[in-house]
Amino acid sequence: MAATELTSGEYIQHHLTNLTFGKIDGVWRMAHSAEEAKEMGFWALHVDSLAWSIGLAAIFLFFFIRAARKATAGVPSGLVNFVEWITEFIDESVRGSFTARNPLIAPLAMTVFAWVFLMNLMDLIPVDLIPYILGDHGLGLFHFMKVVPSTDPNVTFGMAFGVFLLILFYSIKVKGVGGFVGELTGMPFQTSNIALKPIFFVINLVLEGVNLIAKPISLSLRLFGNMYAGEMIFILIALMYSGGIVLGVFGGALQLVWAIFHILVITLQAFIFMTLTIVYLDMAHSEHH
Amino acid sequence: MNINLTLIAQLISFAVFVWFTMRFVWPPITKALEERKAKIADGLAAAERGQHEQELAAKRAVEHLHEAKQQAAEIVAKAEKRAAEIVDESKDTARVEGERILTAARAEIEQETNKAREQLRAKVAELAVAGAEKILRKEIDAGAHKDIVESVANQI
Image (tube, rainbow over all chains, first blue to last red; front, side):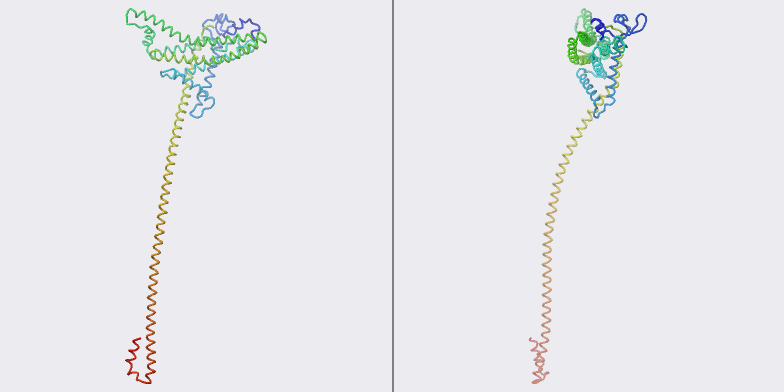
């Protein structure tokens, strides 16, 4: 594999670099190295992350829309039954945590859960398999290939930022601009002393502001951190394959154990992302929390 | 690990996919689930109603059977009574008819007897006259003793 010609450090770095498309030296092209990818700055796209995440969402929507078309009040078939099971599970979660009425929340939760789950699921594919097939030793199509979109902070931050925008939108829609600002500045410290009010105003704004900003950051960093760490361990285990038969067999066993454990992490992270999305939006809808 | 345009692209695709789910996935499935729930509830209610009706029908059938048995018993009793009446009536008729026949027979017998007596009386008178004639031819004139002979014949 790739590691035979690379040092361990280079192997790991190769696995952690996205297939980046951007402008370098005045030309729009794929980056050939991690340094080039960095140089491209903000105006660059991680083609692999986007392709895999959009592709996975397309798979999710393909099956779910098919099931939705076939769903009737009669006896459900296999696929419809499965989709109905997921729907009921998400509906139950939304009913449990979300007290207001909003037709957006349940479909949002379903998209978050299914999409994050599928993106995380890519982690269970052996780390070298797809990069090897598409990379320099296989078809030679792409030099870099990261197949787990949720190990890309752009992906997790992109989703969390979407949730954050919805939090802001519904906070202002439900409570009004005044109510929202009042919530940010009028708590937790309250006073009737006119002189103290501006001081408390600033302190409250700092505390509540941090509280508000922490929501999308914790949401995205939790998912990214978990998946990135999991991916890193898979990469380190994969390194053992180049260390001889004994280490290779040991690595194989380790990979199996870690993959089985990771099934739990994958599902749990998707569920946490969904539940926190629901809870944050519930907070945005309620007057006091 | 670079933050770049991917974030914005991901945000936009997220919004698009949520819209898709909200438009094409969630409503049809929840609608189907609601409809199925209603259908099952209706089915259960109908089953219960059917069972209730079946119980009522069974009860009605028992009532009908009971009534029919009672009617049959009444009819049998009436028929028995009527039969007894008919037997009694025919007994009476037979007795009256027998008496009538008996009376008629007696009347006829009496008539016959009277007739025979009349004939016998006439015959006896003739015989007596004939006998007397023979006697009287020898002894007396028939004309002179006619009164006496007739009075004797009348005494028979």
